[in-house]
Every structure is written in structure tokens, then in C-alpha cells.
Length: 446
Image 1 (tube, rainbow, N blue to C red):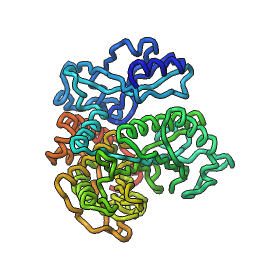
Image 2 (cartoon, rainbow, N blue to C red):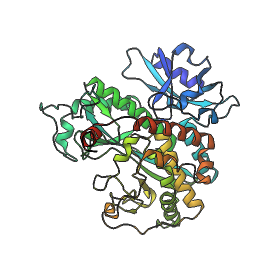
Image 3 (cartoon, helix red, strand yellow):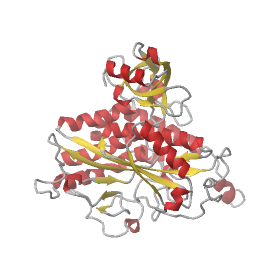
Image 4 (spheres, one colour):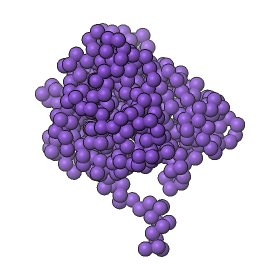
């Protein structure tokens, strides 16, 4: 939409307030409220330090390596195409995602949306357009105000809690049908294009599929969706969580990313004129195998996320790939030629969607440009039997991010420094906590 069209849209919906929002490095919502009548007139700014804070709200120790020591303002510019209603607001309210710009008028290099745009520009220079379709998993849990207590599913319509996995169960969906109905309605009101919901392997765990499309638009939708799920769950008296591993003995939650690439004529570059797979598909997979370990801190951005990668728990444990094999990290689903794609099963649901999609596309792009062959043949069995070879903790993972100059160039050095600083700070904060496991097994035994 242009300026006149957004004005008409605001007037038609009698909007009184506008949420001017930005995804921070965690993928969480920050921004400002302003009256609708001032939205098209004022120039909004936000401190650049807000773009890269830890999950506890702290600043990384190296923040002045990549930002001005004065903590200057970044200029926010609205992307009118992202305008959505806020169905849960008490007065007619709109939300509009904004991009962040530095004083030179360039996209701020540390902003999450800027990183994805940077990767998409690299594709555009080749005459290519990525097509993605995320799948988001999450759990419903009872309200939990005491972090020392174990989580448990909410009480369903039958008055009981789920006590065992009931994958793909329609009864499992029916138990929270009120939540499901309101979630679908709220997504529709915001033009979030979800096309299906299923009960997943865990207790009160669900997966939502998005209709495939433009990578930036889908990242915007996932960003809006995660907030929406939390709001609707709260209205029903329980929590929704995108924590990667909320239960020790149940599967974690992922953000699977289906990705293909089309040329200027809309043809899938992974197949030839006869619809047969070509070397670009294999090189895309080869690039993802080669570079994914260096991007793992983006796919597993929190210390908890590394508990998800465990053989037998529906999460990839190594760099195997295969056809229609859900035990591998890189899966090529059964499809027709135009839909030929690679599913990246590594990202956790706690990933920042802009950064996870950017990293996934970057790895595949480098593989195609460098003609990287897959490291292994398609795996025909349970890949978990090959053992765990993915990074096992946040500190070692994030330390790999700047080891490959080609990746640093794609992401931008300022972003890499900021991301490493934030995640190293979070790691130090997490290991300062004495856990119940330590008190249980070490207090009197060492």
C-alpha cells in the first residue's frame, strides 16, 4: 500500500491507535503506540541498543563494537503492506511492522528484518526469488507462575489433562476447540495465511502450517502469529509456549522451513525443463550440510534449545539428508516438479523467524554458488542411529558464526558481532543458575 491507501485503510477500519512495531533480535515485539491521526505525519525513532538486548533485557558486553557509544536513534519507517488489525485491542487498533534505518539512510545492519532483506537482495541479484512455507509447533500449558514447578497441559473440555502423546488425534484438537476456533478467527482477521492445524507428538502440542509464499511476508506472518497465539491462549486462561524443549520426556517444538527458489519466469530452479531434479537441488542441500553447523546458534538461539536435538525425539541429531524422511535434518518431501523443495528441520520454534529463514537461505545459496556436493548419500533409515553431531550448547555454537567469511559477508559483520555478543551474554547468565538437577545429584554426592 502507498500512503493514500494506508490512510483509506485506517479510515475504513476507524482505527484509533497504531502499534508501530519492530522485531528485536529475539524475534519479540518492541515499538511504540501512537494515535492513528499522527501515524502518517510523525517521524518515529527508537534507540539502536533496543535492537540487540538479551532475553533478560541486558546489553552485551561488546555493544560498542557495532553501535555508536552515544546509543543514537534509529529511524523507523513503516512497511504499509504489513498493516494488520489487532483483534484483542479494546479500541480499534492497527499494527504495522517498521524497518530500522541508520543516520545514513541505510537499513540498520543489526535489525532482524534488515538481515533477511540483505539475503533476499543477494538472491534477487541472481534473478531468483525464494519461496518458503514455515511450520510452527507450540505447546499449550497451564498457567505457571512458579518457574520451579514442572509444566503440565491445561484441563480440556472433558475435565482432564492429556497424560500421553496422541499424535494427529482429532479428539486432542477437540479438547481445546474453543482456543482453536478463536486462533483461526484471529489469524483470519490479521490475514495470517495458515492452512492447517494438527495435534503433534507431545501433550497438548500443535503444529500450524503456513501457505507458501514470499520469504519476507512469511517471516512477518510468523512474527505476528507467535504473538497472536500467546494472546489467544491467555484469553482462554492458559499459556502457549514456543520454548524449544518445555518437557524433558516429550518432543521439542520446531519451526520447519520448506524452501524452494524460482527464476524470473516463476520456474523452480531445482528441476530441469522436464521436471527432473538437477544439480542445483543437490548443491543447495550440499551448502546446507556444509554451513548449517556455523549457523546453528540462529536455529537454536537459547540454552534450552539444545535439549531438543536428541535421537528418537522427532528432532535431527546430525547433518544427514533424505527423501521423505522425517528423521533427517534436511528433508526433500514428495512433491510435483514445481513444488520441489528442501525442508530445513533444524530451527526450533524459539528461533527468530527473520534470522532463521535468512540463515537457511544463505546456506543453500552458498551451496549453489560454490557447487557444493552433498556430503552424504540420501539416508534411507533412521538418521538418529548415526549419533549426535550437531553443536551441543549455545556458547560453542555461537562461537562458530564468524568462522566462515562468506557467511559473515552475507549476514554483515555488524550483525554477527551483535548476535555473538547477545548470545554469549545469555549463555553466561544461564550457567549462573543452579538447577534442581544439580541439587538432586551433586549436593550430597560429590
